[in-house]
Structures are given as C-alpha cells and as structure tokens.
Image (cartoon, rainbow, N blue to C red; front, side, top):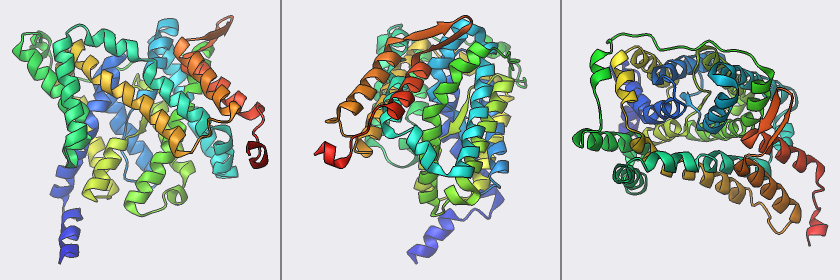
Length: 406
C-alpha cells in the first residue's frame, strides 16, 4: 500500500503536475542563480536566460537522461570580479568561453582514457584547498556589503542559518531564497528600497546581453579556475546517479555530461552570463521528492527563460540592498570553504605527510594572498595561479609509499 502511494506521489505522467513541480524546482535554484549576477554586477535576467538555455543544451547533449538543472556557478565569482578589473567584463567573457572549451577537452580525455587521468591530475589534496580559496577569497567582500547595515545583514544571516539547520523538506533547500526574502521585507519596512526603477520597468524586456571580447590574458587568467568545478561536476553526477539509482557516469556517460556543462558555460559566455554548473540544491530536491523525471527539470529551465523576459523581475532584483546580499555571503562563502575542508576529510588526506602540508599551505597562501605572475599582457593570479601551482606540486613532489609512511 505504502509503495503504491509513493509511486503516485512521484508519478509525473500528468502534464499539469509536471509543470507545477518544474516551477517548484526552479525556486529551489532561483536564489543562488540570481545571487551570482547581483554580486558581479550584471543583469540577473541574463543569468536566468543562460541558465535556462544552458540546462536545455545539457539535456540535448546528454540525450535527456540526467535530471539536473544548471545555474550560476559560485566558483567563478572571485575570478570574474578580479578579471573584470583588469580586462573588463567583455574580456572576462572570452575567458568564460575558454573555460567551456576546457570542459570539452577534459570530456575528450575522460572518453579516451577514463577518470584515472583526471584523478591523478586533480586529486583531493589539490581540489580541497582550491575550493577553500573560492570561499575565503570573497570573505572581505561579504563583510564590506554586510556592514552597510549590520542589523539587516545579521537578520538575513540568522534566517538562513535557521532554515538550513532546523527545517526539513524543500524549505531546507532554499536558505538563500528565504534569507533574501526576509531581508528584502525588512528593507522595505525600514524604507531602504526605492521602487522607482520597478515602476518604470517594462513587463516584457530582453535581458541586457554583453558581446564578449577575446584577450589571451583574460583567457589564461580564467582557464585554471575550471579545476574545482570540473571535480564538483564529477561528484554531482555520482550523486544524482545515486538518487535516481542509475549510472549516469556510464549512460549517457561522464564525457557527455561534462561536455554538456561546458557548452552551456560557453553559451553563457557568448551572451554575457556567468558560467553554469550542476546545482546541488536541485539534486537535493530530486532526492527529497524522489521525482527523477528529467522532463521536470526541462520545465524548470523553460520557466527560468520566461522569468528572464519579465522586466519587472529584473528590476525588483536590482533593488535588493547590499546588506541583504552581504548577510547571505557571510554564510555562503564560509560554507564553500567548509566544502573544501570536507573534501580533504572525506578523502582521508594524511597531514602527517610533509608533502601534503606543503601543497595545501602553498595553495592557500597564493590564493588568499592574491599572488600574481605576469609577463607582458599575460597575468595569472589568485585562484587560477594557486590551482596551477597545486597541480604542478602534486605531480612533481614525491609521494611516499606505505612503507615510507610507516
């Protein structure tokens, strides 16, 4: 009896039910998807548009078999901000397109030689601290935005912590969304929100796309940042495979899923959007609801595109005070850093080995310290430089055998 009830709840044969669930899944991803463009100061409608089309591109390349939604990647926030200061946003977009091509190259490597090559080049000892840098490098940005109004920022932070810690079900998966809503309501009540731009905005409006420019410096600056998201993608594919009880790494194949992610990211770069990534929040929603029908995620993607064309939505998002975003970032970027620590712990990284201490220490110092190497118009800095140095150290430093460890 219970089994038949569960089947009824997860049955998506009814088109109306699919649409309702698809829209619901978009709201799980909505807060994070629009937060990234707000932080890098671009039109959030562009991110919604490219996330929606990027998800559809992914589903086409993966033969419509994998129930995932692609949204704006947090891993690229710090590099985009830094690269924009040096090369301008159009130049940075050229780097984002190049990142998509790197995904394609890694996809080909996996197709030809399997995962072992990737695991050797990007082990946990490199990926863990790189993820930590992604979070920690933006800590000052979060604090600077939060201190514009600490009471509101702390209210947003407290709301997000309560949601992620004490709630259950779908609510637990949208702490960013609810935190922003609570902070926004408080801001309206205290008179911090000006609705002039919302009143003036058209109901229908195309997103403000940006044409990319190609600059070798920006391309080489952005490419190394792809390391952590690639590893994250691999983990997400195993995770969603476990939820759906299917081996997506074999069918349609990890090479296809990574290629889909890469082309979606390149597509976003061509239109001025941030890089895409598979969203763990949506994977969590799939696990919670037990609804693994990929058609539902495609409905979420189409809904994102529709939302991106509503000018009022973009105008409302742009009125969100900095303190609200800062409150979210205080939690978010710290959580990203903690994922890096979790990566090291889960892979049982042995810190009694000097080699491991050296690799982690240098990656963190270079990344957080903002070290930069440059020659002519070329420069490599921050997360990208730290990633490259970490990969090189991992390959050249001798790895002790079991007997040597003992």
